[in-house]
Amino acid sequence: MLATDALLAEIPRLRRYARALAGDAMRADDLVQDTLERALAKGRLWRPGNLRAWLLTLMHNVFVNQIRAQRLVDYRSPDDLPEAPMRAQQLDGLELRDLDLALQALPGEQREVLLLVGLEDLSYGEAARVLGIPVGTVMSRLSRGRDRLRQLLAGQTASVAHLKVVK
Amino acid sequence: MERRPICEDDLHAWADGRLDAARRAEVDAWLAEDPARAARLAGWRDDARLLHAAYDPVADQAIPARLRAVVENRRRGGAWRAAAVLGWLTLGALVGSVGGYQAGRETPVAAGLPELARQAALAHAVYSPEVRHPVEVGADQEQHLVAWLSKRLGAPVRVPNLAANGFALLGGRLLPASEGPAAQFMYEDDGGRRLTLYLSARAADSPTSAFRYAQADGIGVFYWVDERFAYALSGQVGRATLLPIATDVYHQLVP
Image (cartoon, rainbow over all chains, first blue to last red; front, side, top):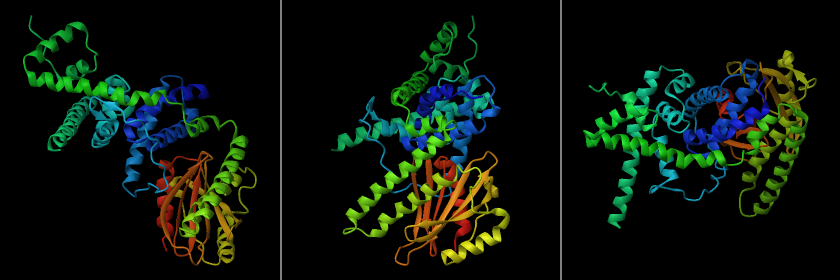
């Protein structure tokens, strides 16, 4: 049986990962909510072990389905409240939004690997198990994802610098 | 001693700080041979730090109520239902008052759309937890159900088939709505999760509308209006779960 407290304790880190993966706070919490619902629905299958890895696996499945569904229709409601205004968070000259956009520009499969390893500090083997792919695939996606992210972020700072010069 | 060949895995382990000191020294030496290599790896490492700086604060935020509710509600169905009903009633009062206030300046129809979602969610919160009497007429009498509700709503009603989504029809009921009769169809999956499809006849003066989404107190609602009916699909599931089902319902009901 899944313990409520154990599940609650995982939510903050799931939200962090989902936030980076989904690109905005509302989509991220939708992702977490669907993951938790799935975990509860499958709770009887749960055997004590690595709860986080199991939840991340469920989230991966939800994420993959979501990408599929999003292709069908843009379901953003005009009534949706804008994201709670975060203070403009400065990150080495970049804003959080720039990083969000750069991550969203990566293919989902590269983004997942990059975040599981780079943000969630999973070992390469753990990331492979969560995603259900060989370790070699994790490494190659990681290389492509990291190089691409670097290019994207370098491009953004370059364009910012360019604008400043033109002004 | 000759250095073991450096492979891509070593580079990631270097950027992630997962190499032992000896191997790290070897990679450092390899990087020192070529500024381009060093720049590439420094970029990887900086970006990993950037990810933490950007997203770690999310893990320090308080857990949103709706996520806490998902985990805790499985024990307290009754309390959840009361809270959901109260929540949607309160929201309705707010929407109603705002709508009334704006009626002079905006079309009253715009204020009526959230009303649809509200009524559907309210009906969902009231009836979907029912164990013994979830519906008035069961799916075993589907023909009768459809004929009866079509007659009461004044136009032919169709019942979408959600088997492909894992949901089976339980049946339906007639409901009072602010502008006359409404109908509710209820579906259930193997895990006992329930969805309800609410429909009411479209008022003659209200326009059709595309997909909209609203959510409160753990109930998500997709709603839209076509030539004949206003529809709302409600469920105590996340938007991503509900969306493909709502899309399916929408396509099945396109006139």
